[in-house]
Amino acid sequence: MLKLPGLIDPHVHVREPGQTHKEDWDTATQAALAGGVTMILAMPNTKPPIFDGETLALALEAARQKAHCDYAQFLGAGPDNSNTVPSLASKAAGLKMYLDSTFGELRLDDMTLWMPHFNNFPKDMPIVLHSESRTMAAGILFATIYDRPVHIAHISLKEEVLLIKAAKERGIKVTCEVCPHHLFLTSDESASPALGDRKAPRRGGKGARVNGRKEVRPRLATQQDVEALWQNLDVIDCFATDHAPHTLAEKDSENPPPGFPGLETLLPLLLTAVDDGRLTIDDIIQRCVINPRKIFHLPEQPETWIEVDENATYEIKVENQFTRCGWTPFEGWKVKGKVKKVVLRGRTAFENGKILVEQGYGKNVREN
Ligand code: DOR
Ligand code: ZN
Image (cartoon, rainbow, N blue to C red; front, side):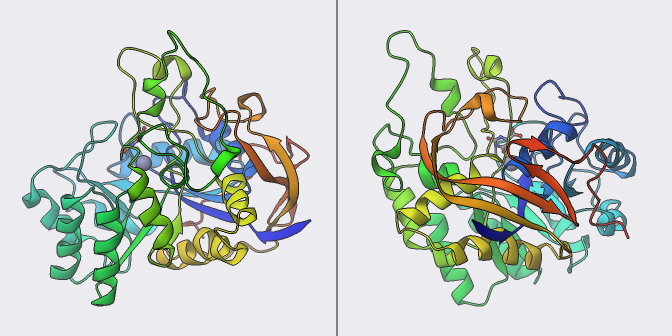
């Protein structure tokens, strides 16, 4: 049995308020614990979006009643709230800015809308950017001009990881995360370089509608991009799931929303990569505990750890998952490494497939 610290996932879409048929604070935080994640940072693109005191209170009240694991809630940057969000910063995980295409209403197309946020949001609190390709380059320029740290969410492209590497070498305060789906899946159907033949055989065949299930933002990238991420792991500060649950019916509809669930597959995929010699356990601890704690100024969780059977080999199956969305892009994948037990602040929160702490046990880590 391998003992690890509780993992921190800095990028989770909980869907409450507003879209609890996809997920809510109850099921998202159960999924987190089952995945060995003891703290999540929740994204603000809910319905309504979290962008002022009132909506923040709405999300935090749902979390207070329902969360099984610890958490903090991001604020969303909108066109009109750059003067008001700074006063809420200490109660939030940080500020999320959507600079590119996403799910929901929070999007800032015009750079004049970015400026007051970069100027006003407290410099010691994280700003996280959803920014792809050249927009990401613009975001890094903003970090330089306004002399403040930025964290780039879910990088997926070779050009992105190489530019962040160059920016870091120049001392620019930029950090980044990568999601398992951008490390283990490609836009083409060819085998991922990471897991070789562990991948499930292709299912479906004639008439199977699988395309909506590949929709995610940023999109899955090419083999070359995926290889560049693996080759530049030292540039990557965090592994984050971007857990973005949508129901299977929605994913298979005419207009599929982008996003994959990920909380329950994060650690099994990473441990399988350890088994394949592509990662070390220390790489995981750095990127799933130490770096997110530092970047987002998160407190240590006392008496908190997870126990993992690193030799357990099994297939990922949706029926074993706690997420409400009812599917996973990794269905049928053979993985090695299973979370057996999670202890959160002195209590056994998950053991042998069961959640053992009640709704409301989770703590807001921005509250004293
Ligand atoms: O694939 C995505 N899903 N990308 C995003 O930016 C948003 C997310 C969601 O909320 O579903
Ligand atoms: Zn996201």
